[in-house]
Each structure stands twice: as structure tokens, then as C-alpha cells.
Length: 616
Image (cartoon, rainbow, N blue to C red; front, top):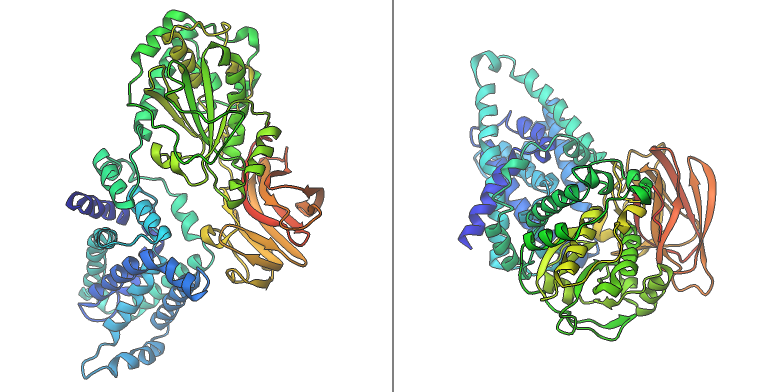
């Protein structure tokens, strides 16, 4: 535990100098410009207390009280704004001090106000994503609170404070120098204006985008937080099992296989032309079959010999049903090359990989390859066997699919990604993994290498992946956006009312980039929102194609969604099942104004965006 606390403290130090601290720095400066010499300590103490308490407990507390998830943030912004106005207009500060003066003979006003402002900072401060804060978020989401989780969060906050406190003290001491003291009233007013600007940034939800658009200059300092020691401690904290292959090991293995891909092409750019990561994704699909690299058995055997052995593959656990197969075990599959694909049927990233999986099954099943799709659901409707059966049929999947609704197999593998592919040799050893999309040529080379090592001669002398378009996005696009209060981001407009029928008003004017809003009657639940009368959803997105996970709800007839792009009706979607629907395709690569008009009862889950329509 001591090791994890030390790592948490260092992670806090790194966070305090990272881009995500930029939105609160003006408030730290302004808060330190007034009051006694102890005011900076009061401000930072308030930040530590509120960050620790509300990071762990806010979700559970607000859920129990039936209050909006953004209530505390809105209160904090209001506190910041009031304190800022007190700096700009000194007479307001006099009134704000009186409640604290009444607590005793001493003048607590400025330090008391500092502590209150620090409390608000703890609610406004959004740490940059990292393994430590991700673990804390998992503990908060599952409400698995413990002394250890509280200590980790507190020590993380102390690491942040260890950097911000000297900044606050230095600000105050600097403003107390003689040459600044004479101009102190004007400096404080200027800082108050700066603080008002910070509050406006927070009101408009620009803080996250500000941090996201600043280069990640602390990335090289996060090695300790991402180390094997930290991963082990975090797994214990969150009660998770260890994955056989972590991201760094996977990336290192991919580099090795890329070398083999270049060798196959005689030093040409096979990897660059097909992975969709180092070049234009469209080049993979445009590669003619006759230009595809030929595969040599000697290279395959050499590659198989060079792949690491990461340990015995965990068997299937807590599988509810099987599609396209009787129940399987890895012991029964010994002697075969097995590819485990973790997926879920409404995930756009998973859908884009399916053509490649189908092609590998078709090309190599007779040579000894067995693909098993482990379907682990993201949304409740993906737990339904009939829905998954429909998806398997619609996507023309012929290999076995195992339903893992309780995440038993997912946890056994220590998996964290959709999609994730694990490659198992004839002895049941895990030899390779790839997380996410792309790297199809490299993955196919691993399949061929393991088949050759098993004594099989892989079919054909060209790679199937070179004949299929790689749809992995290569340009920035709007992020995946969830339309439910548990993971709500980038929402603007009327305040969300959780789990009750409510009428919403769309904000006036054009939405900011990547923001969305509701109009009409909606019921906003944890992972979905249910349309009522005159239900409208607007969003401003960056992409060439937009997709939405939706379902018809309990209605006997299919629902409908009218899709308007930049004010023009482009299509009406008939919602006859729970799945991912294409809303728009082939758009120019720029921001677009999207408006969706729903018939009552339609259930809305999540947006995803891409460059082209996923072939499925």
C-alpha cells in the first residue's frame, strides 16, 4: 500500500504541472492576492478537502438525493464568480467578510473566504486522465469504498497541493513587495477580472477543451504511474485481475511484427500501407490483390519463434450462451490457433474490425484457426441473447460467439478495451495482442506464423487484409458521446433531471464545438435517454459520418428519427431494433449542425463518429 501511496503522490505532482491545471491557475493567483499570509494555506486546504471528498462520494451522494450530477460544479462556479466580483468591486468584499467575522473576535473573513474558494476549486479541478485517477473513478463508480481508496485519493490531492501551494504563496509574497503594494488595489481588480474570465470559461465548459488542446508536455513524466508496480497495486485496489499483456508489451510486440511485415515485402512499406496508423487508411483498401506481398514460410516460422510467451490463456468464464457453436473450452481447442476477440455489437470500433475477422475465418479456418468472439456488453440491451443473435446474423458472423454479460471472461483476462484481440498458440500460450482498430496486416501475419508453427501451411500466398479497406479513422473527430447522466459530457442547455420525465429547452444560437443539447420532453436515465413528445436533440460534430446507438423502446411499431444536417432534412431513420444506426455519411470534413427529431419512446444511447460508413 505504501508503494501505491508514493506513486499517487508523484502522480499528483505531475498533474499539478500538466495542462489540466491551467483553467484553475487564474483562480489560484487571484485567491492569493488578498488576505493574511495564511490565506494561501486556507485555499489549498479547501481544495484538498473537497477534491478528496467529492471525487469519491459525489456520484453516490447526488444519486441518493436525486440531484443533478452537475449541481456541485455549478455551485462551485457561482462561488468563484462571487469571489471574483468581490475583488473587482471591493465594497462587495466587505459584505462577504461579515459572516466569517461573526464567528469570533478575530477577523476570519479573508481566510474563511479562502477556504470556501478552495472548496470550490476541488469541485472544478478535473485531473488529466491517468491510471491512478482512473482507479479512483472506478472505485467511486462501483461504490467499493475502503480506507485504501480514501488514502490514495487524499495523497493524490496532497501531491497536487505540494505544487500549487508554493505558487499561491509566491503570488502573495510577490504582490506584497513595495513596488506592487502601491498598485495593489488595481492589481487585485485586474486579477478579479481574470478570475471572472476563468469563471466564464468554466460556465461554457471550455476548460476541458483548453487542456485538451495544449500539448501533453508531462507525458514523459508519467512512467511511474504506468509502471508494472503501479499496475499491480491498482489491480489490488480495484479488485481486478492482471492482464497477461499490457499496452506497452502489446506495442513492443507490434513493432517486432511490423519488422516481419517489411521483410515479407522485401523492405517495402507493407506495414505503412495497410495498418491505417502511419499512413492514409484508404491506401489499405486500394491495394490491388496482385500487388499484395507474398508470404514466405521461413519468415513465418522466424516470426513465430520471436513472439513472446505471456502465459497460459485464461479459459472462458461465466459464459451465458453460445452462438454458432456448442460450448467450448480452451482445453478442447488445444492444437488449434485461437483468436479471442472482445467486442460488443453497437461499438463502432468493433464493427469496423468485423470484415477482417470474417476474412480470416474464411481463409484460415480449414488450416486450424478458431476465432471466438467474446461479446461483453456495454449497454443493457446488449445483454439480450436475441439482440446479439440478430447482430451476429446481420454482420454475417459464422465463427463462435460467447455471451459474457457478467464480464466473467473479461475480468479473467484483465481486459480493458473494446475491441481487443488475443492470439493463442497450439499449446494454449498467449503470444500476441492488439487493442483497438488497425494493424490488420500485422495481426494476420501473427495468425499465419502461429499456424505455421503448429505444422499447418496457411492457405494462399497473399494476405486477406490487403484486399479489405481499413476503416480506422486517421483524422481528429468528435469524441464518442453518451446520452445518459452517468457518463454525460459536453452537454449544454436546460439542467438535466435524472430519471424523471422533464421538458427541456434548446439553448439559443449555435452550439459550441462537440456540444449537445435537448429540447422537448425527455427521461434522462443512467445509460440512455427516452424521447417523449416533441423530443429533439442537437449536436455540433466534426466528422464525415455520424452514427447513433438507438432502440425502439417498448413501442409495438418501429420508431422514427428525422435527421437534419445544417438545417436540411437528409433522411428519416426507421428504428426497428437496438443497434448502431448510420445518421449521415459522406459529409465534408468539417463541423456540422445536427438536429434529430424523435418519435415518442425511442431510446438514445451514444453517438460515434467516423470517416466512412462501417461495412458490416
